[in-house]
Length: 258
Image (tube, rainbow, N blue to C red; front, side):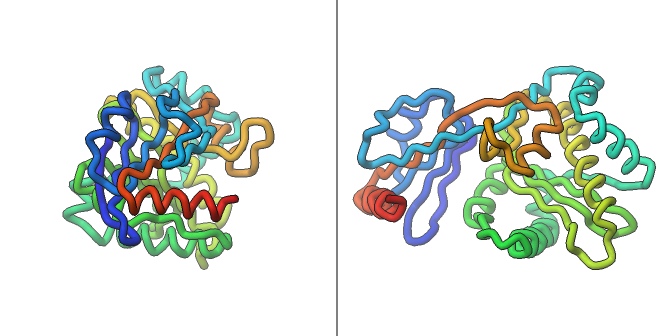
């Protein structure tokens, strides 16, 4: 389980991942808002006025399988591009939380490139620095990077406990001047394959691909993730107001959504 608490927008927030006993975790929390991610079965009344419940679809890869079997599950074209990126000299490296604490410039580079990436796509920057700082302090972060000739092509950030890892952020430098977009795409796929192998070696049993928009009508990102052979699943994310301020925040969010 991952359990961190931080301050953001005048509210004390408690984020919990991979929790088997949601009721106990929420009861023990002293935060204004408790955000419980990836609940398989709801144990809270969905009519509760102090909670927001969101259904999420995702893809899951069982990492207990042998690497050869996992590789064969990949899209045929992905396997070709991964092998080609390897021959082209793309190099991958991993940074654990302890590495990010001792080398803050590694995370700083990711933050800059992720900000540029989402801005170029015209989407809101969802990077949560206060939460990320606590995840790193709690040793729950893995950052991986693919590069060639000193140029960074792709980066991924995962949250993890002892058995589950979830893709949280991903950035590919398709629009960076001087980089071949085709090679960026191959490097990104190669990095995902590197991640799978690395997580397997570290004893992680489940890889969550970080959500997809739809099972019935997948978009381009969904189809990209599906190419890695994960199985479809559905779970819930729950945000609960614990204090007066927290319950007020829930009411305001619900009002805006309506």
